[in-house]
Image (cartoon, rainbow, N blue to C red; front, side, top):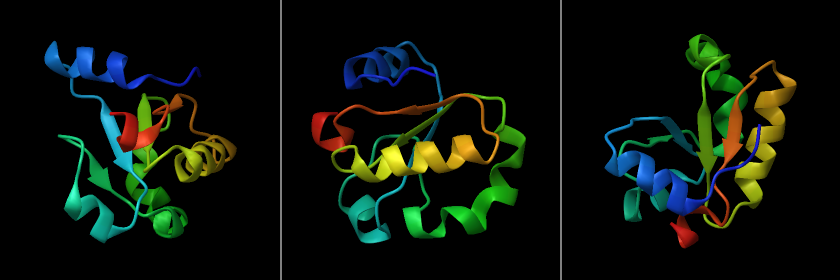
Length: 96
């Protein structure tokens, strides 16, 4: 699945859409600044949360971090676990 730009995500949110957004930064980073509606699952804990995310395997999931590196790893991991519609927020929260 193609990645998503901050502008596209913001447009969708302003239109009332509520996509699943996972912030893979550390908890303290998420507490400092978060994208509205996002849930925090730090990258290192993602393997432990797969059961919680199982129902989302075929739904769109947008992953983000500070600049895009950790979320690219998260996208690759989730895709390798059978998730079919994972998108990385280009530029991360810094660009958002």
